[in-house]
Length: 460
Image 1: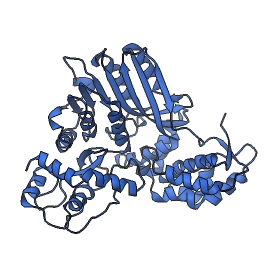
Image 2: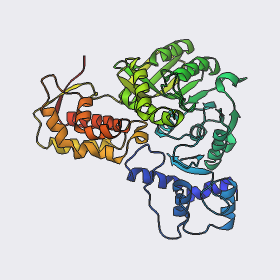
Image 3: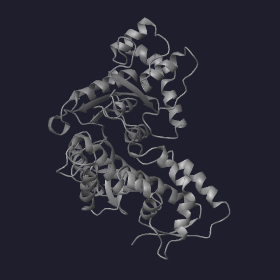
C-alpha cells in the first residue's frame, strides 16, 4: 500500500469532512485542530482513522496489517498501531501534517488559524504556473498552490517542515508537483526563470530586541522585518507580465490601515502591480502583547510572566498604534501601482466612548443572537490565549455590561474599561490570559451597537 492508497483511503472514509464537521460543532470556523467529533459506529474504519491520526487516541480495533504497515512507514503510527510522528488535520479538503508534540502546538511545524485563512486566500486567488512557497511549514499552502499551479517550490529553514510538506503533498495527491528546498530564502534562493506566483505567511510577531523568542514567530521589533524583505525580493523574482504575490501578514496600525501599507505601496509602484489588501481581523495591541508574552515565557525562564508581559507592553506602546490587524494580500502584475485597502474588521473599537441608547423591543435578544453567530469567527490567535469560558463570559455578564454602559458619564465608557471592570476578578487572577476578554467584550459591544442598545462616540 502506497501513500497514494493511504490518501485514497482517507478520502473514502471522509477524513477531511470529519474535521470540518468537528469544526462546525465546535463553532470555530478556522480552528485547525477541532477536538469535538463523532466517534462513529463501532468498527468504523473512518472513526478509527480520525481518533488515531487527528485526536491522537488509540484506534478501537486493529487495522488490516497492510494498512497498519503503511501508516507506520509514513510515520502516522508507530509499529504497534499507536499515534506516530505526525498528526493530521484538513481545511477545504486540503490535508495537512504536523509533528506530534507532548503539548499541543509546541512542535516545530506550525498550523494555526492564520494558516487556514491563508489557504482561503490562495484557493480563491487561483494562481497558475510556477509557484514558490516561502516558509512552507506543514505544506498546507504548498498543496493548496498545487491544486492550480503546475510546479511548486517549497522552501523552509527547518528540515522537519520539508518532511511535513512532502507528506502533506503525498496525502493530497499533488506530491509530484511539489519540490522541497532546504535553506534561507533571503540568502540562498535563486531562479533561472521568473516565477508566476510567490506565496508567504512569514513570522509577524513584534518582539522586543532584548527578549528571547522562537524564530518561527519572530518578525523583528515591529513584526514586519521579514515581510519588508519579501516585498523587496519579490520584485526581481516575479514574471513582470504574469506574476502574482500572495501574502498573509499581521501588522500594527491605525484608522488608515496597517503600517505595512507604505512598503506595499512602494512595491506596487516598482513592480507595476495592483494590490488588494483585506483586513479580516483586528484586535488591540494589548491582546497581541499577551499572545507574545505567553509564547515568550518558556524562552525567558529568568523572568516572571508579569515581567515578560510588562516588557512586551512597553515595547508595543512605543509605536503608538491603536490597532493590530490581520490581513491578506493579493498582488497582480500588469497594473498601475494602485493599492486598495479594504477593512472588513471594523466596528466599535475598544477606545470608543459608549453610552446607552433608547433600545428597540427585543434588542437584547438580537444582540445575543448576533454574538452567538459571530463568536464562531474570532481573530487569529484568540484560541491560543482564551477559551470557551471567555466566549461565554459576555453572554453571562450581559446585564452587567449593559448596566455599566447605562451608568457611563456623558462622554461614555470605553470597551477596555468595561472589560476590566465587569471581569475584574479574571484580570486579577491572570493578567495575561484575561486579555482574551478584550476580544470577546469588543465583539459583544459591536453586537450591542448593531442591535441599537448603545451609541458610539469614536475616540479623538
